[in-house]
Amino acid sequence: MTSSKRRVAMFCMVAVVAAQSIAHADGVCAAGYRTITAEGRAVMIAVLEAGKKALPPAPVGWVILGDDQVSAPTSICGDVQRSPWQYQFTRYYQQVGDQDARNKVIADAAAVQAAAMQKKQPRLDAVMARMEKLTQQQVALLQKGDTERAAALNEDMAKLQDEYKKILDEGDSQQQFDAAAARAGKDLEMSISLSVNESRQSFVPGASNLPLPAGARTAVRWSTSSQGKNSESAMFLLGDWRTTTPGEWRLWPRPDILTNAAHGITVRINADPDRIEPTVASINFASLAALLQR
Image 1 (cartoon, rainbow, N blue to C red):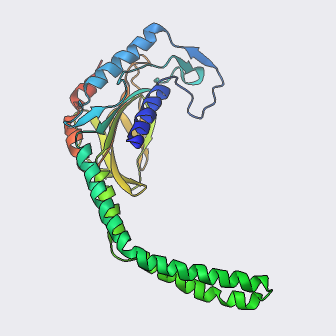
Image 2 (image 1 turned 180 degrees about the horizontal axis):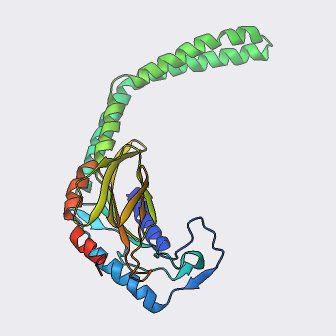
Image 3 (image 1 turned 120 degrees about the vertical axis):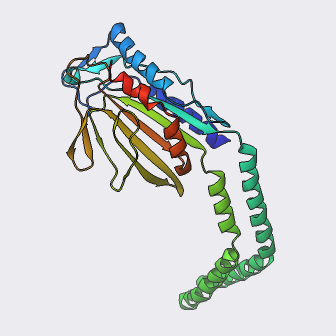
């Protein structure tokens, strides 16, 4: 529960920070920042609100984290003022409907691990007692200045340590617990981001192509792993994107619209591998593509 609360707090913080300002790509703004007018922000908010409607609601048993509100930047760097302005919205989802079942999986595995440990404990205690006795012998020898005989006991100590570890590693209760933890942590979180007017995108090497939804110029999917947890990401580029080098795409601005209007849209999904396809199917890509016709 504590980790879930931390994730909620982190997601909310990220959503707030990401909407504060549009900065130059390298963090340096030679021309200084310009305040965006209320009218200029209204255009961006309208795009984000329309894009937000294209995203799916929380699946059954899931909730949407944070206030789920769009927010437009308040300033822009003068260096990039004449280029399409970048802004974004991210929706974060979390699975909550089966928390009791997930907790039981962990509790059952922990009980098995505890029972296995209880059976091993007498032997572990016996080995530990021998290690303590050997340590006392070494200390006594060192106090007498007999470092050679004290060092000779290191080999016996190493054997006892190996014996202790062998007993500790017997059975598969730890593997069972690790597998249970992996099952309990599977398909817990998901995020979908809409980024408007990002100037370029580079794909992860080895990413595989996906079928193109309405209005998409390219679509790819790749796997990621963090702390033993596998997830997948999918990215869709809508608008006039052109390849510059292998694996890299650059957005081609629309010359007949305002810089704060939608020139191109990037959709990113990060979720459990089994949830990518149904999530893609639930996004209204046609309505997103329509934003690029305004």
